[in-house]
Amino acid sequence: MNDDPISPFLDRAWSALPGELEAELNQILQYWERFAVDRQNGGFFGRIDQDNRVDEKAPKGSVLYARILWAFSAAYHYTQRPIYLELASRAFQYIRDFLTDHQYGGLYWSVDFRGNPLETYKQVYAQAFGIYGMSEYYRASQNAEALDMALAWRKLIERYSRDPRHGGYIDAFTRDWSFLEIKKLSAKDANAPKTMNTHLHLVEAYANLYIICPSDELKEDIQDLLLLFDQKIINKADHHLGLYFSVEWHREKNIISYGHDIEAGWLLQSCAEVIGERNFIGKAQKNAVQITVAAMEGLDADGGLWYEFDVDKQQLVAEKHWWPQAEALIGLCNAWQLTGNILFRNALLKNWFFIQSHILDKLQGEWLWGIDINKMKMPGQDKIGIWKCPYHNSRACLELLKRMGQLSNKAGV
Image 1: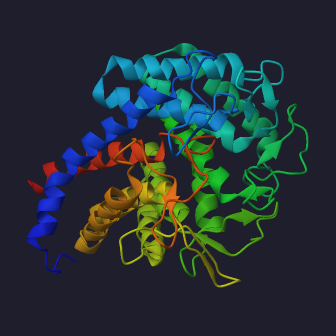
Image 2: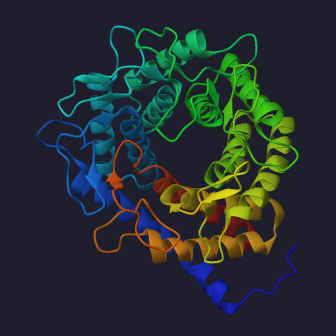
């Protein structure tokens, strides 16, 4: 598997990568430290555009805040820089005081810029990120309140969202956890009662919670979710993942999301490794390689990963967004670790060159939303927003730094 020639250039690029990732991690987090803090209304701004113009009255979303919480908590765990714990604590306090529904439980989707409830429905996706962020914050701070909140949100998910008949979880509910007709996460998503995306981030959240608070019940829930992916969500014919499903798990649209594919490959394996069950790990490793190979169909000649492909319409969404590139870094590294095939490592380096050339905003900081088919910056997008958070890119840096340390120790390079 290691017979392909390796150019001296790629060897030098690989040797330089840890230092570049360390520097990029600092750049990302320092951008948020410098520009994102809302000192007038509390917490962090809800939106800053790609030209660094602050929208002081933009809504503040629970997913944004949970991802900020995770990112600075994880960064503190890695760097031990006190400012990162301070910023994580700032996110924690805002979530606790404003984004948490103290009457019905769970997280609102959003509040206005002053912290008043705005969109009060309960997306399970947002609850999952709340658990993910709170469990990571507990690891960093040992704040018992954070753990209590994560456990309470998990109980709500299991009580209201879990489908005992068909398996899996329903995506969304009203504020009081009643039936909600419109369940889609965003305008571009299908209005499906069950989605791959919610289930992926739910198993991610449960696995992170298991690290700090293991239990047999939680382990069984993680196993159920891993089996669900293997049996219902991963298409064994082509190893792409379905995105939208009916309650009975009938696939509703035939769309390939290259970023979600490559993210799911490594992330499901990571969740299996957390619970430590050999049969789950073996199956997840096999799936990870197959899913990564399938996702590489979306790699362009320049190393960037395309966004989506509609199979029924035979239509490519010819955009390269920031987050699939971050997930490609991890997924390709994971596949190289599993197989030793140097083609994965070289694809990783090419993707990193693409990120450096087209996605990093070297003048104003952070990562651009993305570029179009002509390699032009996509207009009207966010630098900070409901969906644009320091999560995918900081996690990619942290994951690769960890993995490259393991590889270096193993390979003696």
